[in-house]
Image (cartoon, rainbow, N blue to C red; front, side):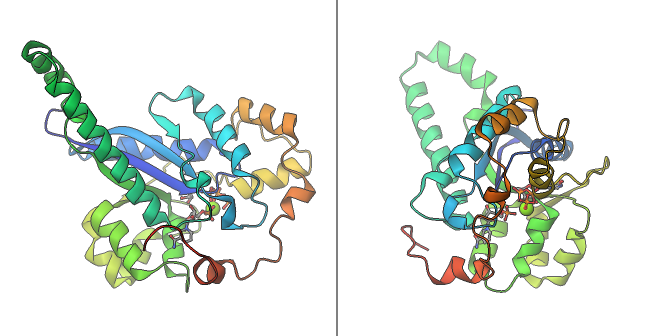
Length: 270
Ligand SMILES: O=P(O)(O)OP(=O)(O)OP(=O)(O)OC[C@H]1O[C@@H](n2cnc3c(O)ncnc32)[C@H](O)[C@@H]1O
Ligand SMILES: NC(=O)c1ccc[n+]([C@@H]2O[C@H](COP(=O)(O)O)[C@@H](O)[C@H]2O)c1
Ligand SMILES: [Mg+2]
């Protein structure tokens, strides 16, 4: 275990609402990465997208973050991080990765400072116990196969951002009905070039849980029990979050992909 590379998994998306499958993505990815024998997954982060993303039916990030927090109450390694949702506007995914990478750098630095101030005997005991916390972890973007497919949507992603994602960080992509990530990689020169940094994870117990279908069921008063956690169902009922009205939010925003890149003043550098 000592020489394994510590790794943080970051998933970006709407999480509108968080589903059991979102959390399963992390469990599947962690098993897969551990099976490579090279990595030790130390943390999972869910980053709900900013309200400015403007997707149809996207309810307020305040609710999406609260639901994710409730759902993750049963996990001892995955957490929700509101940073992305708290920015002034929608920001590109690579900037979210950069932020979390810098955060892990900062954390490592402060741990090193802390260790420096300890007595040598304490230091050596803690060092051997927590090797994985004393080197800089890698950060990889965790997604479903449909997410990978969006790379080829015109005007949605900048090529240099895709390059940075697969070259500097890396991708862990879980299979999803209707998408063929291996084929998609084969067809893309860029993705093929960095194939060594793209991990394809197969979900053998196939299911088609989708947040959109969950919202539709909720709007029709149908049960979603066992698809999302009970705590999240209780929150949705209490706040009456998913209604026909919430589904109409951002309706008609057909140019959303183009809008993301054309009309925004982005506070962060490219
Ligand atoms: O219908 P929408 O609102 O798009 O919701 P969704 O279920 O696709 O959920 P998100 O867009 O919030 O997804 C966040 C990430 O989780 C992945 N994901 C969600 N459900 C999945 C499933 O059933 N199998 C594999 N990946 C999934 C998806 O590809 C994204 O990378
Ligand atoms: N250029 C980009 O960085 C870019 C473009 C489109 C979507 N995304 C991200 O992908 C995720 C997509 O989420 P949905 O599947 O819920 O639409 C969101 O986190 C969004 O911010 C990033
Ligand atoms: Mg989706």
